[in-house]
Image (tube, rainbow, N blue to C red):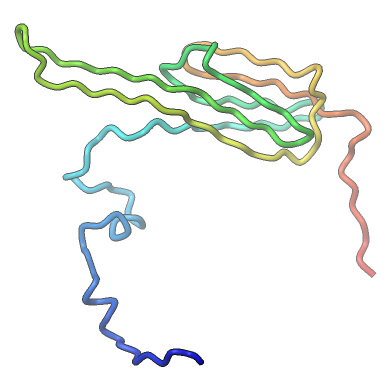
Length: 146
């Protein structure tokens, strides 16, 4: 048997929190009382030309040994272990210490499959650059709808 509940149109207003993250989601500004440093994020640029895809991923403060790239057909996965330490000292005692250990990852699919054996990766100045040649013969097929 179904439970019958009474609809309360003011229930949402009673739970309204003006300083929650949802309140500021549509604005370009972030609240002043939130900390300025957040968990690291990986930003991507993907450029498509006739022969290959070029992907640039910003992963600052990471050693190249801690970056893993995986390619499966047209699915590309990038992950990295991030270790961030920041310590402020005043004399001999530590005033503030901030540490972040974690991982960042992005996964995306491309329009065409990638030739895995010819893919190249280079990491320099916090930017990972991938050159992913398109697989020959794997053209996008369009069909007509009848």
